[in-house]
Length: 260
Image 1 (cartoon, rainbow, N blue to C red):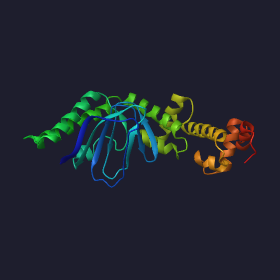
Image 2 (image 1 turned 180 degrees about the vertical axis):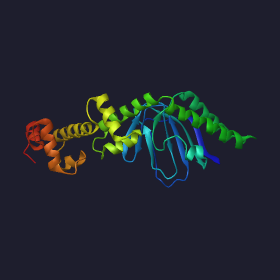
Image 3 (image 1 turned 30 degrees about the horizontal axis):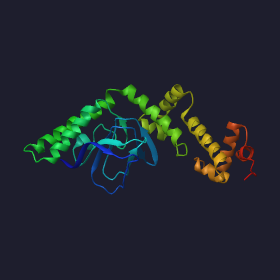
Image 4 (image 1 turned 90 degrees about the vertical axis):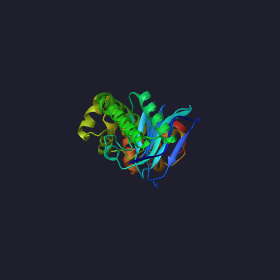
């Protein structure tokens, strides 16, 4: 069974568009963005280039929106289903991915929107068939470009660490995002960026802390918390090891303020 509630293709929204829905819904949502976009997944802001897609199952928290100061455009389908090729298929849930043949995917959503709008004689046959083609093409975007997809995922992880260093990062969680084992993640991350994934987290946390010490009057313990540290002493040790000076002394040096 597949029942479309709403479907639209090539929708355009104004600059700064955001879409947020709580987890009380019973429907599925497929979003295919034409432009750079962000997705908030489990408290982390994930950014993707143009032509990405995401599949939200029932009872998922939904948040996505425009990434750049440009109008937002996408295709989307909100639907109910119990079909195994969707519910237990090969499309990862709540995981954005890059699409190939995106004009074809957009055309398929347009056809679904048309079939849903008009009361055509064979609608009960055409809608499931179009869904199957659509999901095959989405799966092709992942399976036919495994190496490119892995590189994209790795670059995306690197970008998300830089943009969200205060998140509770861990190697197992990062590896889970890329659907690989932690040891393999550590190897390919080091090879690609010349730094381990956790060292990258620490480096970006400390750079964020340095900026906050320069610009904010918040106590050091609050800055430590804002940068992802639960222990201020641990933060201070890492800061001094990385910059050769304690957070308090650094603030005093750059702002000529009393040590807090």
